[in-house]
Amino acid sequence: MNIQHHLQPETLMAYAAGTLPAAMALVVGCHAERCSQCRKELRSAEALGGQMLETVAAKPLPEAARNNVMALLDQQPLPERAPASAVASTQGDDSFLPKRLKSLLGIDNYNQLKWRKLAPGIEKFNLPLDEGKSFMLRIGAGLAMPVHTHKGAELTLLLQGGYHDKLGSFHMGDVADLDSSVEHQPVAFDDEPCICLAGMDAGLRFKGLIPTLMKPLTGL
Ligand SMILES: [Zn+2]
Image 1 (cartoon, rainbow, N blue to C red):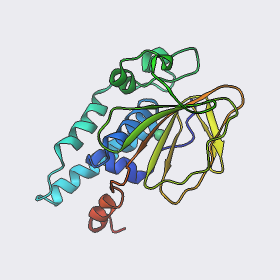
Image 2 (spheres, helix red, strand yellow):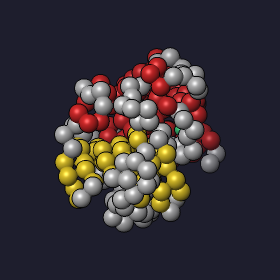
Image 3 (cartoon, rainbow, N blue to C red):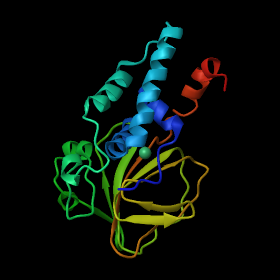
Image 4 (cartoon, rainbow, N blue to C red):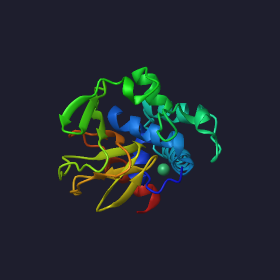
């Protein structure tokens, strides 16, 4: 899996600090299962968080933040060319079922989900998370989603197939890390249905906090 689209530094920082809503943290964790680059950046974020702790003694890193990162680091580093079965369960040859999603939903493949029809060829499944909004979409080959903007931040991870929009082509494993300024219309690739996992902050603000905190330390 050759990942082209990654998480923004602010998102990785927020994850490491434990300030991401659960709906978005799930997407970050699932992407990181497959992405050594973002795993490496999460380790740096954690190290920076540790330095902040020493400098700003009155601001302990929230317990949840430590748990997020520790859970991630506890996992064996995955070699770039690990067989898919060592990384995640698959259905068929070309879909990616992250371990976090598998255990959260208790499924072995995406056909086991109770998909709800949104429009012809487009189905949705809402995930049971109470922070932010989390759902999956299954979009028929070649179909377009309506043009939309986002009220807040949105992370979308490609689990099967892919789509293209004005930002580029997104393939399995890629993540679109978008803020509310982006207006786009994803169109699924022609050759197979596209399945993706989305996490939104749904009005919960999180970006901006960490960069502000870090300003005195990094001189940004
Ligand atoms: Zn990445």
